[in-house]
Length: 221
Image (cartoon, rainbow, N blue to C red):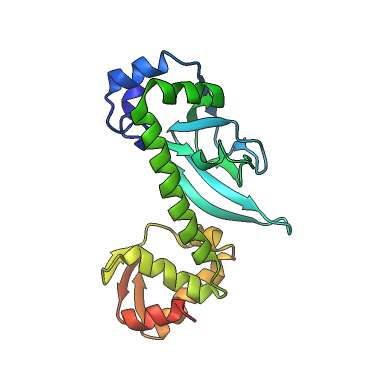
């Protein structure tokens, strides 16, 4: 199990033996959840570090109208909500739900602090993760500030393209519907509108951008 943690940013710069030695000096739990299980609830106190070592989960935010908006997918190995553990309002902002069987290492706050004292590299890595997360959330906030689905889709496509004129989508239309908080047919219509305008062409998740300038104008609308 510890060899998987060597690819985790929290333990960057440490080898498998060093990680194992550190974990042997603190108290932690191993937890397993089945498919479609609720791991943590939105609003639940975030008093522990949860490291996803196997499987895939999603973060969903429940709205007042009862609908859920998917925020992101998380693949192992990764850390859940590291920025909230030491915050004044340390509550999970989303529901965490498994896609398949998932395994976690759970380290409570007191033991996490002990881990930081034992190894300065882990502490620096953790602070770096928090900074990166803040930047990511800033981008998410800007994304969800777009009023129209067309603007959201255009922003998503520009971000996915990363300067390329041709690329393959990493999400299905069902995934995008969850991400945008709309029905799947609405996503299909938004794609068709951009295609009919001669801005893009989409075939089996392969996207060709014909007019990057008009695509940029679309997300500025």
